[in-house]
Length: 287
Length: 125
Image (cartoon, rainbow over all chains, first blue to last red):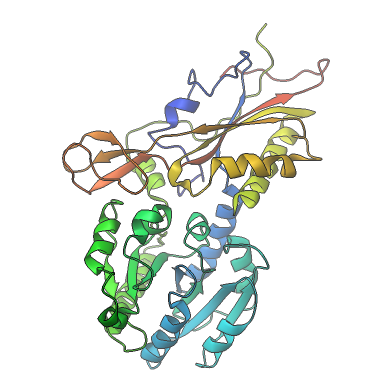
């Protein structure tokens, strides 16, 4: 999906919908209305609005994604403690039910809004928008959005955040990036969590997990850490400081950032391929 | 999983297009889905009848075009077909590739119906 028009045409699929392409005409020869819009257009529009809101407050928004139980909330608790005297943090929590995670974060003295999705398996931009109405951003440096624990659906939804962080705990298996490529392709950073447990696990090889990430053509860095033993925590907070600094520099130049999930729009607008972005054609049967 | 909400977004877009063109019904909807979009075409097809019911697309056929994954190597410059968890260059084996196609989730076209006696602008694709 591109930055400008929200379309989703790439050099790889443009020929299908361009004039004369096989999607420009139906089987019985009728011309079709050509739309060329992302199915998640409405979500992306809301996400753009959310991003503007974050940007107006100079906030870096980080989306945390992983399977349930990989240690997202524990990571947040350790991160809040570590940054306490330096950066102001707020949290949006997503779960199907309960306020448990928001309560854990609030116990650390940090504002937190809990979204309970009922049965929805992911957060979308509209849910985050509603949550932002309950979360004043004045004076906040970083907003963490803890997505619903799920390695599938959250990867497809832009929430208006700036960076995706995907956690993989060492109890899960080092082939997760190969099994869930959509999720790990979306990662700007992969965190290998519960790394202190490697001492008692002989079947997780961090290098294999990192190699599986490279097989997805991802350049995302990987950090090995343990929220409990604080191993690697400094590397993680350094990454956060650098990202916040980079985001504030972009904002000073009236730019923002989007997570790793949408590389093709940039390709479109910087490439030489010329395609019609949004063409509405209405036709009757050919005489 | 989230295919139902994607399908709801699809129908909302189709309804908007139908209203914009003064259509009385939608005959077919064609979408393009790549394996890396995170949407399963079969689940989408199954949730579709539930979502279209009672809308202008009540009788519309949903055609799903499945797109292949293609990458271009930034090292050797060649293009290759790839699989979802192996996006490396098949020619030189390098992992510095750029995705050309395969993560699309795209509403490609809609075939509309209008009353015959009403003038509608005709533009050939």
